[in-house]
Image (cartoon, rainbow, N blue to C red; front, top):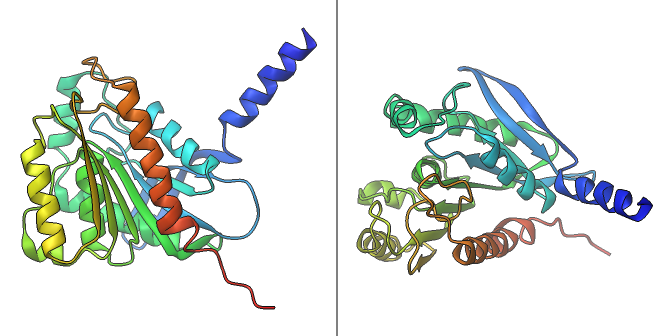
Length: 254
């Protein structure tokens, strides 16, 4: 019994980041709400802007932020819907349709600036990750903010405008479904081709047999694909480690 209780306590300790919770960010253009998860350890850390799906800032997105914090990142999941969360497709569509693209990008830029202003964030080591709608916004934040070093997009709408693509300075990792209808594999390949033609660094993978939102275990249409989701997450962590964590470790002299 004692051993079982200790195991449960250890599991609970490992399941949560050092500190996590909802915060209000005061900016020169008003306040933003978000979920901030902090890693253990003093000093500075690389940071990530986390962008939710069209469902809103729900528990699954917060769990992704917690997981990233356990891997050493300051993770800020921005609430683009200002407190509203959808539990059905009609509401999700309504919230998504009510969010103008320019407004969403502006909110994410302000959140990125908030991270840069923190004493515990390495300003040169900030990235963005998003799923579905969040994948769309993650690549657009990278285009809008040249200080974004790494961008992870899960099945988000590609950028087609060459001038917008030219503004991207981040290295990009993409995880997509072979059975997805939006974006389709053809659209993904065209986007990757356009990025590389523009001299951008991009690593895209299309998972056979996986549809939209294959990485979300709570996918309401039963589209979760465990093997693809685990592989995509391993790719994501390795990518972030290379682009943000290892590259941002301060050098020490003898």
